[in-house]
Image 1 (cartoon, rainbow, N blue to C red):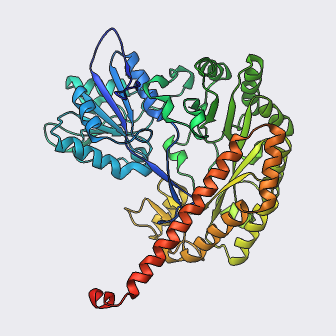
Image 2: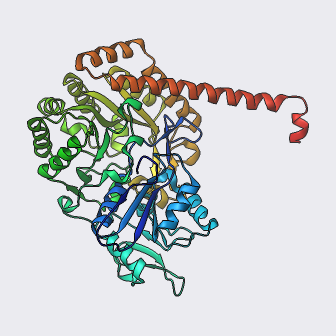
Image 3: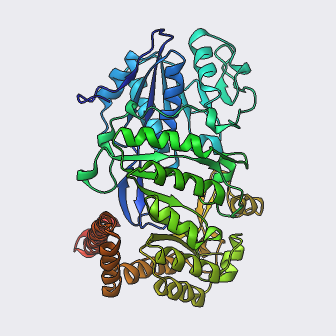
Length: 506
């Protein structure tokens, strides 16, 4: 998008049509633990990489493309309607956190009398293909190999039944139909680098206003060879694992460095799987002298002093790992394929290498007891971790846990995400107890003087201060949100006891 906010457009000598791609408003709830009415609402802080990939491919094929990210900029119905009227086709990206907003934005276009073919796609509808009201089609799966054909068929009146990865309404009969099976890109090196100028980069920064315009997301692999029972991501990639070559990744990084990006988030499910490939990428970064600060995620299986040292030298400053639990039976239930001892060793090795370590934990596995909650709390507090997320186990559509529970009648057809609580028959402990355990662990972890002293010393030693500032800001926001939630609850109770209220309620 340009400085006036009218949107960036890819220009090609041959105009085949105008395509508008929209990411609707989306927020995630930090420190909510997958529980309703908990935590604090946070905006997305990264550009919509999926739309940028598709927009780039459409632009290279001769279409004029406009991308609007309402998760990065304030929502404007007037802006949406005006852009849709300029377009020949409108596409919306659907994720779990914006599903309702997609419907609302489509209704805005209908109410404004915008008559354009509308399609939707994205992770949410890939897991559960449905066609939204007033839309022509739903695009399923990774669409880099199919989007040009789909758009071309829609704009020229072609036969959509011949398109791959599509659920559509037959314009003649009105019936729901499907096209050919989705095409999964096998050679990721063949996919062009996304044109990040399709979005205004100044909308994005995880580390405050001073760092706006310097953050990019990079995907170097897709899928995961592991089969954690709670994870639905493997269903998105048809149980495959594919990688980009080191040379291909380094070519993109060179472009990003030249354009002034400095913070990179590697969005791979598990960047550390292939040690040889990871070392080749790290060595390439070091040899080229790129001045990046990089965040990666990986499993504890890859813990290796040499690997961690090389990553640190290449600019990696934050490593995120899914430790999940301090109880072995819970790790086994989640099919993590690791041990509590191995988890602890990985954290310590990363800490010794000068990496900041973030870990994810899950409470509420089927047979967890009070003693297990305490064991996980001790495990967390004993490790040299620099930040944590804590969630109550969620049975997510597409995961093996959801499939098994649905088969046993514990989850209904329309329940796409169900928390594991005693009330739902999915855990031994009730929701109220899990809420207390989640909040207790967060408060005990982040509000220890010893934690802040260690974090300050580590920041000074590594000369990395942005991460500590980020954690401090989020802690203040969390406290503010918790105080607000408490005051609202007290106000509700007070109103219920005001004289006359009882009569009104009766």
